[in-house]
Length: 297
Image (cartoon, rainbow, N blue to C red; front, side, top):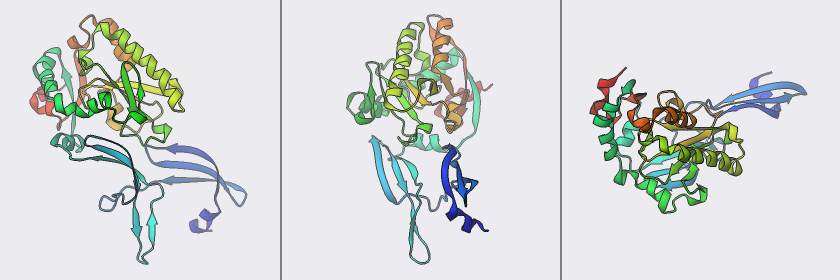
């Protein structure tokens, strides 16, 4: 028998595996009373004909950021319209700045060694230029009720879905906790005295997330980035089983919150301000041309 003849006879009984990163699913079922395994994989996007044009639903928007879901409808030679049933998650940035474009364009990555001196000379002045209006969307969330329906509010932070998550699939759960304190731009500003503050946030997140989403606390990965994508302290909260985050979850970018806390216990009163930090830096990042390219390992 042919594939086209067998597929209509397949009756699914169990999902063996569903991988949101590789866009693959393995189904157990039967054909004519005999066990069968069906594996399906989404094909790569056709960049010339992939823009969703039907069933577009906006989930959230904030400043220049929009996200939601949609699908692509096409017509065959017989004018019959077909729609991609799986659809896709949509992220739109409009209007996109030069910084946005540089962030999403692929560039070579280099490992740099940021000494306390390099931080004071190059990185800290740069961070100051990234505040003000560049963080208006953060203030919208913290103080102006943006995305309030999807948020979990705590006295120290607001927890909300990240725009990388579709808000549905728990296996790719991705949340971000943005703190109210505005004196912490990155881990460089964390001192030993902040340990109780961080521990309280950690405990609160681990308690609150399972009450809102069907996931156990020991399946949550809490981490921060250095360098972060924006300079107002925030914590990433993702499903520990989700590996589809590329470079953003690798060593040299992500640091577990627990490791941050433990490091502060031994770094002394000045915390991360006196620590040498090695991390990956793209050639497209402003810090590369501001001088960090002279600090490669």
